[in-house]
Structure formats: structure tokens, C-alpha cells
Amino acid sequence: MQRRDRVFAIIERELWTLLRNRVVIAVGIGFFGVIVGLSGVSMGSPGGYVSLTYDLLLPVEVLIPTLAFAYVYRSIRGDDERGELDVIRTYDVSRLEYVTGVLIGRTAVLLVVVLTTLGVAGVVASQGATPPVEFFATHQAGDTPVVYIRFMVFAAIYTLVASSIALTVSAATRTNREAIAAGVGMLLTLAIGLDLAVVTLVSTNIIDAGSIAIFTGLSPASAFRGLVLEMAIQPALAINPSVATASPLASAISLLSWFGISTGITVVAAWPETR
Amino acid sequence: MTEQNARDTDEPPLAFTDASYAFGDVTVLKEASVELQSGNFTALVGPNGSGKTTLLELFAGLRSLDTGTVTRPTASGRTVAYLPQTPGFRSGFTVRETLGFYTDLVEDSADPDSLLGEVGLNDAAARGVDELSGGMTRLLGIAQALIGDPPVVILDEPTSGLDPDVADHIFDVIESVASDGRLVVTASHDLAAIETRADRALFLSNGEFVLDDDPKRILEATDTETLREAFATVFRTETSGVTRPGANGGER
Image 1 (tube, rainbow over the protein chains, first blue to last red):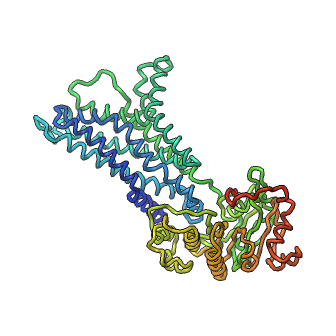
Image 2 (image 1 turned 135 degrees about the vertical axis):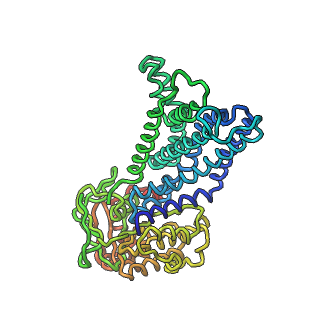
Image 3 (image 1 turned 180 degrees about the vertical axis):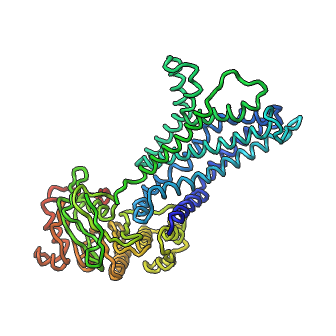
């Protein structure tokens, strides 16, 4: 049995777990309904994809971590509660293999839900536009689907990071209540707390306003927002803003760091290395 | 703490040497040594809170000793199987699918239906794991423990809370597993069954194996008629202050 086969077995288990869970499906439908519903408001908007991206940015920023938590928090936590984690440990499965399989399996379903939803939202918003939205990118400025495709790419990266953080919560907590409390705390911290912290630091002159573009990249949510504003929307604007809202480099490093550090913590927290 | 591996059949598949482990206020092992042999059904006996589950977890490699040495088989693949006291399996899967997942984790994939046959669960193969009774869940857990043909199988109170008929069936399965040349170590409060079925009983008290022998010889040594009486004799001092016996849970 190769390592790859063991990881695939774990991935398959996670996929079927989610696909057979009615609550998971209902939450996915809820996410789909909210995002596609919001895109319906943009249907026919002269702002096109730029307008749609603006409209969906905040909901996606908040809902993706929520969706990730709903899909992921029971994974390792549930195995531990049932005693299956102890059983799995008696097989020739390393912590890294187990965590990799769980992360890939859960994130794959998340990505399908997020990207399908955003794809449908894009199609819905493009319907009935007058004058017709230009569907082919011919130049860097102006509204093009490229704006929205970039938004979807960043949303996918953000989904991966949110999933890895939710998995850390699942591995590092010891009870269901702990996991839920930590998950809510995580959502509030990522969606609001870190941004508020940066605003507080600026308002108290601990960091200067010129550095705010870098510091906003510290939170995964604001890093995602910064990448969308600077890399997806900004190139489509006819007039470039004089001040950058975020540092794309800092945002990219931040997301990479959040993913790497949270996954590392998950591997260590999954179970103590005793054998 | 060090770990050794049993390299050949002359060495015991499972052993503690001068092993110590404390868990909170409970001293589970105090420089204790024991060697367990293959083809043997060994029962671990002790009052609630004596640390039986923790000791089984130490044997299974789920915990590390504070000091001392634990010896386990060296064969590649799965060498020690473990079934927790109240096993559960992920919902949404059938019995066959659940075993299928675990067989995918080992080198030589066993046939889930064949494993179910060994424990008498053939008819439940297509049933969802959520639809199983407590006894059937334990049997599924034992079938899982046979995957990869591990030389050591550790079961934590596999009959607790089950009716006598199901408990008897589970002990039949355990004896069958041990007769295949495996070492089966089981914590249990079912002293009547241990008396007649186990090859060896280990009485754990205050971190020491205070009795370690064939159950029949334990009766002779303690001058008692039943293992229940022997248990009362050995643990009388510890339980004299107990006014209300606790539940089986929370053994950790």
C-alpha cells in the first residue's frame, strides 16, 4: 500500500461523507442561493463584472469561512470523538497523510460548491445586460470577464486557506462545544477582529497610514479583499486610485502563511507522535 | 521511555519492562514488567479508575511510557490493532464500506465480506453503521481489528453494556481470533467469562500487576471459588470506601 493510495482512501472517505450529509448539502444550497440571488440584483447592470465583483466581495469574504467551518469542523473532531482516530493510528498512516487526505477531500467539495456558485452567479449577472457585456477580454481596461475570473481564482485560494484554518480548529479542539466556540471565534476574528485591530493601530498612530496597505494583508479576509481590489478590479478601472488599498505581495504572503502555518499546526495537533 | 520491537517468534509480541506511567492522580504503571505471548487470550482486570484503558493505549502505542520499555511486534504493516471501549463509525456509510475504507489502508487488502464472516456479521454488510446495535458495532470493530492480520489485537471492554448472548458471541469471536495465533488483550469486567475463557488474567492495582496467571490458578492462589470472589478479595481495600459503584465509562 503506497502512501498515495492511503491518502486517496482518506480523500474518498471525506468526499462521500460530505456528499451524503443532508446538512452539508443544505448549507451548500443556502450559499448558492445567497450568492446567486445577489448576482441577480446585478443582472443587466451596466457595471457588468466589475459591479458584480464589488457586490459579491463582502458576502464571499464572510460566507466562505462560514461554509468552510460548516464543512470541515467535524472531520478530525468527529473521528476523535468516535474513537476512530485511535483506530486509524494503529494503521500505517502518518499524521501528514491523514491530514492531507482530510484537507484535500473536504476542500475539494468546498471548491466545487464555491466555484460552481460563483460561476452561475457570473452567468446570471451577465444576462440581460444593455448594452451587452463584453465577454472577451481585448484590453486591460474596462469591464471584462477576466475581472470576474480573477475574483473566482482568489476566492478559490481564500477557500483553501479558510478550509485549512477550519481543519486546525477541528484538530486542536477536544470537544464539539470547543470546536463550535473556536469556530465562531475564528470567524469573528478573521472577518472583523483583525481588520479592527489594524484600524485601531492606525488610529493610535502605532502604524502610519502609509503602511496600512501592508498591514491589511495580515488577515486572510482582508488579504483576499486586497488581492481582489488590486489584482482583479483595479486593472479594469479607467482611473487608477492614487493610493493602493492593499499590497498584493503582502496579501499573497499572508494567505500562503496562513495556509502553511495552520496546516502545520493541524498535523501536529491531529495526534501526539508516540509510536 | 524506549521502545523495542519483537524481532522473532521467541520474543513476546508485547511486553513492558520497568514501565511507569502516571495519568493525573492515577498511577497506571509503577516500574511494572510483563510479557504477553502469542496465541493467547489475556484479560486485564481492575476496578474502575485503575487505568486499564490507559494501559491498553500504552500497549497499542497511543501513549508513550513515562519511563521503561515497551516491546511490540516488528513486522511491517499493521502490528497492533485497537478497539476503543465505545467504538463508533462515521455515519453515512454501510458496514461493508466502512471496512472497505480500513482495508484500503493496509498493504494486502482483505475482503470486507470475509472479515464480516469471521465475526458473524455477513447479513449486516449492506446496513448503515448508524443502524447497528451496540453489539453489532463492537463486532464491526473486531472485524476492523483483524484487517492487516495484526499479531496483536487489543480490545477495550468489548462486551460492556451488552446482553449475555451477544457478549457470549463476542467472547467466542475473541477466542477464535486468539486461536489463530494472535495475542488478544482485553480489558473486561465480565469476570465469569474471563474465568472460563481467558488463558491468562492480569489484575491491575495501584500500578502493579498484583495477580498474573491462568484464571484457574488465580482461584487456587486466592483460595476462592470464582474470579468474582478473587476480585473482591484483591480489591477489597480499594473499594471499601465506595458507597456507590460508578459506571464503566471514564476509564481514562
